[in-house]
Amino acid sequence: MNDLLGVPPLWMCIPFAGLLLSIAIIPLVKGEWWEKKRPFVVLGWSLLFIIPFAVKYGVGSAAETVLECIVNDYLTFIVLLFGLFCVAGNITVEGSLVGSPRVNVILLGIGTLLSSWIGTTGASMLLVRPVIKMNSWRKHKAHIMVFFIFLISNMGGSLTPIGDPPLLMGFSRGVPFFWSLRFFPILLLNMVILLTMFYQIDKREYRKDIAGGYMPEIEEEPLIRFEGLHNLIFIVIIIAAVILSGVLPDMPLFQNTAGEVISIPIFGEVKLAVTSIIEIAMILIAAFLSFKTTDVHIRKKNHFTWGAIQEVAVLFIGIFITMQPALLILKSAGGQLGLTHPSEMFWVTGALSSFLDNTPTYLVFLTTAGAMGFISGLTTALGIVPVKMLTAISCGAVFMGALTYIGNAPNFMVKSISDENGVRMPSFFGYILWSVSCLVPVFLIDTLIFFM
Image (cartoon, rainbow, N blue to C red):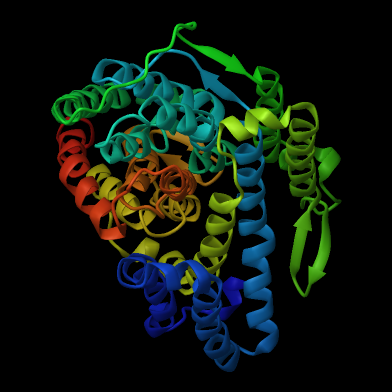
């Protein structure tokens, strides 16, 4: 459908920019109003895109574009977040382990490595509450959650297709499952730099807390104790659903005689694939069983509420809808940008992924690289792509999702849960200041060592 519309004018991106600015500015100047009126702001900006789009391309085309976005992008996105949010909320960590610079570095390091095997969203939802709880006694702790987003919610997902959706998209296009393990030296270097940086910052803030009279309450109980660990089974089910979503479409059982994935018609050319229905059903069943088999006192210990998932659901449906013109323009212009060097692919893919959905952005530049006519490299369904070029595209999409709160699905969720639990997180622009200061130097080092 989108291919028939042509390239939309640049001014149609204004609602997307307006929504981002609303997310960034309104909470700072009218916080209470934003909390109450957020859905209406999202609806307003969405209509400011949909109505002009319908006037220019027709009501039917506008309806198909919006439904395509909701049915085939947003639905699976929010169901996955919802499932992991529910299941992780049913696992609690107790004990005498308290947040100190050394403990926090260990937790962030473990979480980063875990992200590639249960996904950045899975690792974030599993660890965000324990990290907040262990540091609840501290006054200065926002930086802990900022580095949590940098490492666990983004960079850690770079080693397998389970880790982050762009790599899953690459896997479904012929990139071998374990091929991305070759990114480990890049991830390890970034971890060393960022964890060293974090340790120095956290040590300084920790000393401020101690000097200010903030002391942890040490109880005589085991160092660490888990409750609700049976929910790990449901996390595995959700991960299996995500993997199957990338594998099942290539199986003849799920294809019609034309080789297309069997789908249910929704409206016009919009269809919901049977494989997506299977993924959604598995995730929702896992979430339901998690709630049915877990005692409510565990959720009470986690201060579990629905506020964070509601906020993310509302904001991201607006983001998904209003960013459609930007994605159409990128898809049309991707091959005309003259990007021929891995370093260029790394920065452009990453910069766009920090504001747009990193999965279609990755696919645009993977397709672009595959069409360049290279004769050596990794053979994919989209063509031959040099190893360094594919590494640059992959790392750009995964790493630079950490540059903004909206760059990757777990980022805003971690922010929202942190805010809910009394951690004063940086504003939208405040977070960007953190990310530019801490991450851009690391990405420049990556460029010089790995992509030149």
